[in-house]
Length: 326
Ligand code: PEP
Ligand code: MG
Image 1: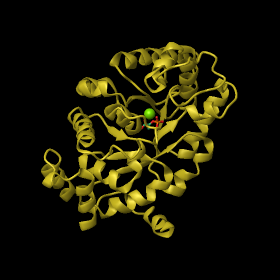
Image 2: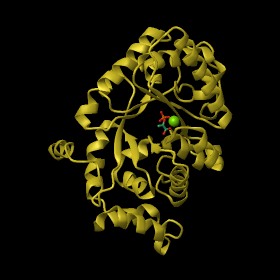
Image 3: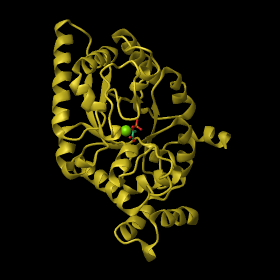
Image 4: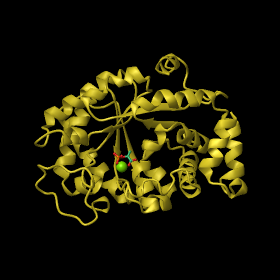
């Protein structure tokens, strides 16, 4: 199998009927970087910057942040990299963060963009480090756990201030800055067109989005087999997001665990996703599926089944049958 996947690296990332789909990888530490070439990823679709904070015993200094970001871009050799601003809180705790509070519902609590907007010093330091590291290159930045559009505007103000500050001191700035939002909180589903217009790209965090749409704790093993990510309602949600992106010409990608399982990746591509980001080990198996996939037939399958599944069967069973038949 490994040999097959190695061979596949040289092949274009297209469906059997010639539609390109970018397979990107998730990363978070310098040790992940060699995987970029090994897995044959098209780039880094999600760089989890909080991992550097989680493996440290104090807040990483600005210089250490900048160095890591520069190393990531150097290792990517011009392939696209999307950095996510620090996503701490919830299940990701920093023992040395004195401001942390006890919460009854951490998943619904003071985390991610909520926390960094309340502690703008953290965000400012990180953004400055990113702007410096990306001098002369493109910076793609995304915000985790966005709930309302005002949070994007607030973050943009902080970013603009840092850009002005650095340009005053004649720093080498990024050639372009693309700002995206992660779609993880269902409130954004009811303002999709406004969201698409407010950002340069959207990345679906399907782990958190599934948790919140289904009201099921993502870490609770008692419940992990109970609800299906390939169930009709969740697939409809994912389709609405892809459609809204297409309608507004806003690139949409998905970077949760869903992207890394061949059957789910197949469903995502059928629903309109043309860029998905996964753990490096999943790229080979997903690419093997992709190059065999008759996308036109899968689209016809969804046209027939997404609103009214055949014989009332579960969507996973129907998708599995589709895959087995081909
Ligand atoms: C997600 O929620 O799907 C996601 C990619 O972010 P994380 O898993 O880091 O919360
Ligand atoms: Mg998340």
